[in-house]
Length: 326
Ligand SMILES: C[S@@+](CC[C@H](N)C(=O)[O-])C[C@H]1O[C@@H](n2cnc3c(N)ncnc32)[C@H](O)[C@@H]1O
Image 1 (spheres, protein in one colour):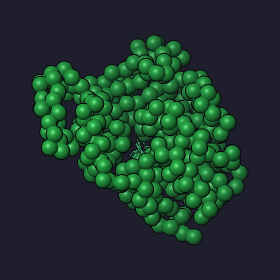
Image 2 (cartoon, protein in one colour):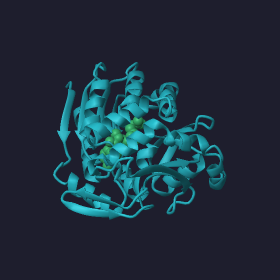
Image 3 (cartoon, rainbow, N blue to C red):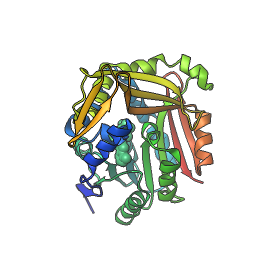
Image 4 (tube, rainbow, N blue to C red):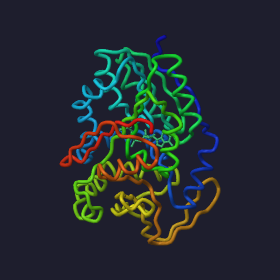
């Protein structure tokens, strides 16, 4: 069976504005709203290609180097299932490599309708079965059903991909539960994320200038501001601030928080409701995590995932982990 791009809607747009209003009131914007909408998707795609945000390109380029080793590890035909697919860059490279000696299908899962379309377009020249699922990745049932479905229709094993930056946008107990519930014993999961240069969390804070600079760059700033566009909040109302620290709940993880700080008292009207902000108050627009190899192995192990292969380059700050269940 051959698909050239099917959108299977598993998400509802009905409540998006309601969710956004709630986010505005609590001052924390859910990660998925950084990518939903034309402007938001476009600015993220521009950020991936920009010279002031090289970290993303480092991850993706490194995939080219490790793809043959990953392919060797996979016995038999495989379905790549991208969770939070973005521009599909990593998955396309993996598919091109795996194709050399096995049958491959590609499934894209994302809550951004706009990015799913961009991903399908980017993968258009790949001559393999492709499906896209417009779905929330923190829904265990949805991800499990997608995993079972692609096995029924395509190949007997799933190779899931997930960005560490996406994993850290959710409480770990929630997102890792989805993975535990969805992975079967034969399946693999590749997680890619920012690595710490030093093993010490405090030391890392002093060594973090490059990462903070990347998030202060023009492309990151404009993507973060696009998240606030539905509320009509602009740079006239305040400025972006990047804070680097330690995760409150998991203190062996470093965390980068991107906040919009109001420079004046401000009244925001959204969905016919006024929401008030005082000068100096902030809205958390985005979060990323930085882990050391040991800390992430420890985290995954305690939450029921086993790392079977790992790749790390401390200079470029990337870590790719291949995991299995249990
Ligand atoms: C930082 S991008 C990473 C994209 C890609 N995996 C990469 O490595 O470049 C995060 C992706 O996750 C998606 N995403 C965020 N929250 C999501 C959610 N709750 N459910 C599904 N997708 C989500 C976004 O739309 C976006 O495509």
